[in-house]
Image 1 (cartoon, rainbow, N blue to C red):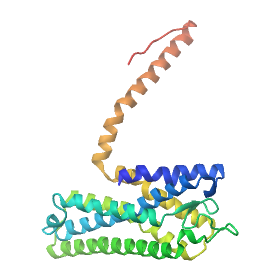
Image 2: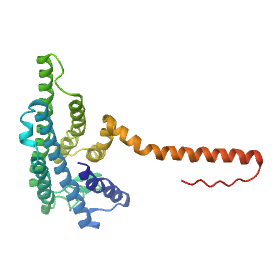
Image 3: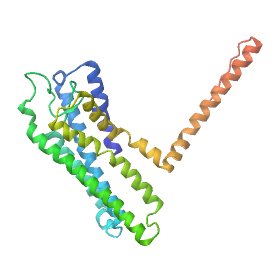
Image 4: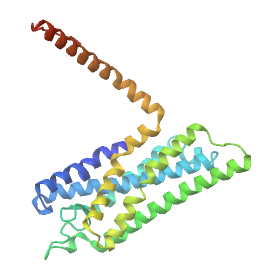
Length: 271
């Protein structure tokens, strides 16, 4: 998912932001903005499919641990990873979302709200609406089923055996997966309604922001919930912080001496 985010965020966050700042419409650079939409929308299809697969894996690991290795064990994991890639490559080019500066959000019609230009038949709106609605609806349904079933089965097992049957590591991984995939509900749901209902601009902006967060806040979630990751990040940055603190302390000390002696002091600090 991190690799997806690296490619998607510049398309639906940075390039679109520059597009708004410069006031450039789709017509100013159709090739750039079309492929921006292809990468952003295709990546969305890939990430949502990957989240469904992750939810399925968590569901089997927690509820049916004996069956899980037969479905996700060994090389089968790599086969499952090919599914979102093939899915996004095909449908990303067929039915892309393109940023619309009138509503400050991705839209299936880049000429939306522009008189005499909107509803261009080249963009295949009916096909897009049908597919996008089904895609998002299935994503929400699968996530609800797998994570809902996971929680119910875990509660039933705990109650039946009268003791926790889930390890600490499983709980942590499931919580992280729930938080990462849980936000998949908001963005797809808003975009389903946007296909058929004309919302105020601030709702459209919220929908686009939720799409950006879907790809941008995963590291934050892992950093907050994963103790091992926090320790690793702290360990990685602690030498830099300590070095900076030593330099600042030395500079303050030199400044204090020079103030008392009224004599300029030169100090070279070598790393």
